[in-house]
Image (cartoon, rainbow, N blue to C red; front, side):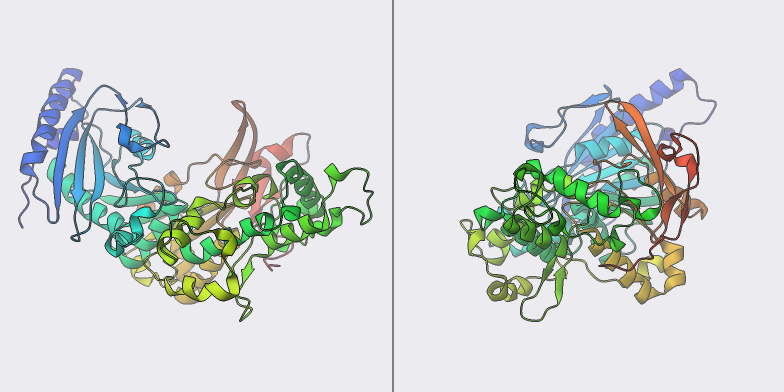
Length: 527
């Protein structure tokens, strides 16, 4: 089907344009935005609304969900196009495309969703728009934060698994081309957690959709990760004696730091080489080299066993094969979500309720790994878990993949990301991997941000420089702020390198300028 083309060359304003010219041209652009609904012809999709937003502030609709920002401010004027995509008879995918009315940087960015998706990501759309991008987001084919949509609807599960992101990319590119009269010169995908899983789906299934991909804490092995999340919860919730109260997380954390903080040559409250950390929470078991007079400062024997399970990951009891790795020493302050109860994290439990067992009343306490893993494994398809390390088609087009994650991540075990990277190297070769893939770990950072370590950084600009100018990122400077005050900065280094302290003066170890990237002291051998 031939698409109608709306030429709006005025969006890319000449340098000599006057302020009056800009206002006049923006007015014309707004009028053309109003005409998009009638003029744009799409396949298996329709424009449900198109309007100009010129007030600098946007209030997401009530249906956006509780996680949506109340309002986003400081926005440039833009054309907001709402789409409904129907690649199958049971599909109802909602997407939005935001296009600057002036100052477009010529790029397209699609943003990802977390957990079970279910809403347009208005905050991420706003961030992309402020950087000059034409941007798009999708609700992944359903509304809400749980997986109830999937029960009895295999096509909707495919939409969530991979199809919604791809269809949004295709239809958004057509919308952008029609609105501006030219295609985007570069296309980027940007997502963390569930958005990282979406990124991997795109790279593996549709390598031509995006020129470069930014994937944070990629929960790419969705099914096996859910097993590990469930078993983390069962470690502390099955037996009341095993429950580790939040008041003891700092106790375990201090013991982990005592064991491994200084092994990188600098005692700074961060574990920079957790893969070589040998920490056993048994060192703080009550009555073992300690006194029972201070139960707040030690763990009972059942609590020690629960902590060991969280660090160890999950193995198939029939074969001994690792299903999914455990959390890293240094993550303990963030254990409230995975192990604090009273239920497992919904992102995990919902998979079992609505996809594996088709029972909304399913009780996690009845789960038996030896008995039930075969049922879990039967739904472990690439629809949900893009685990293939073969990304040759993506890198052959010049595609660049930048992955980032915190070593203190409590939701996506960092060693799962290490395993993916190493499998990519084995599959496409070290040279191609060096040319096309970078993995950056942030010591002390939690899931997609937060935590004790430097956790604020811009990975998108280095990705742009890499893809468009061939300058691979040698490091990314990250900062940490407390109550609005900068208190630490540190370079993040491409794996397997780590930041090595080279300073010598007081306070130097909080300044990125006194660190360089180099080989880890203890290598990359894992526990």
